[in-house]
Image (cartoon, rainbow over all chains, first blue to last red):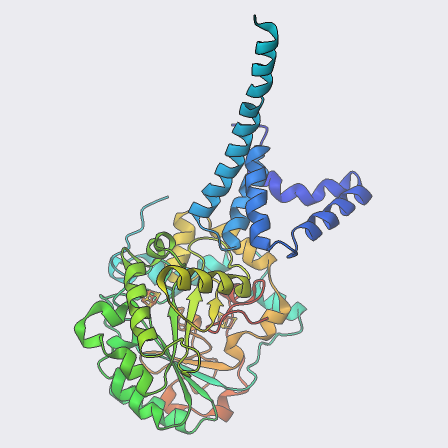
Length: 110
Length: 349
Ligand code: SF4
Ligand code: SF4
């Protein structure tokens, strides 16, 4: 069945430079630098990326950062906790707007 | 994924993956850059040994565990073990060699009935002795409970697998209950001084990925292991070796059965590192099989790729004569050269 997403496309990510070399290369250089060990370890960055991947719900990123988190020595419990962090923030971001709704409700009510 | 039987060896199951020719054909037919070409491009072909430093002796395929990734296809049902006669030939070879280390492996080398005798004889040679101890053997039977004392007496350096600092991943790879038993055994080893600063008794742990992915950075992982094992269990160890799973025997079977084979091989090939190739362990190590035959490494031993020399048995050992041989290679070698490299002593870069 044909779908918009093909797992094989992930391997082609590097090829985006074919249509715009300069910006593509700048992006990958930046990308590579971001994931280098710095004030945060590679492992911490992999878990952040995994959480963000779930927030943006990008199947490519989920594929890539599941593998990367495993290759950085994370186990399933740690990875699921990262996803829960994403879910908690995402859920919280909706819920906290409930305050706005409450404010408005109160403004309009007797 | 088709179900993989995990309680008996592939050999006892009559599984194709216990056949070296079947494995080699599969490895060679993946359509990827050959290892020979990669070496050639790095100026390393023909692949030559440097200096013999380590004699690694496999005392047999018998083991109390049946780990899912085991390249030896070891298990309680394997009966191939080294005889005392072959051990005597190994002793003779070790005496005549300048190698500084004797590395004993298996299976579980301790299950060989002549293990203790052999270690005692080797001790008199003044070389470093390593035993690859799977930890659980120490608690498997009362007759092994005094192994920590025995190791201590002979100042044996231990190398022990513990794929993770929690039970889930460890047991998934090594068998139900293995983590708890390994922790118990480590406590016994710590109690006699292994891993304790200033004792001089060394225990190094080995991490290997529990699946079709590459190992993390060894230093960072060692930090995690040390803090977790000490915080949760009060355990000590010296160094952590992060090794890559080679596509041989049970791990190869797993890769194919789980449909990860092609991606994994591609990953290894893409991660080829010429510096890791230059430092591959076959260049300074010689592997002796349970029956005395010689190989460039333990993986070649399991693939029955004998030494490319007219001296193929330990009884004919001659360091000079084998020093100019070509190391026998195939596609499984990519497992030693990916990323930071992999050897029986961890990363090589
Ligand atoms: S990996 Fe080691 S402990 Fe596990 S079955 Fe093989 S020889 Fe035994
Ligand atoms: S598999 Fe053996 S022969 Fe091949 S590179 Fe590794 S150590 Fe050398």
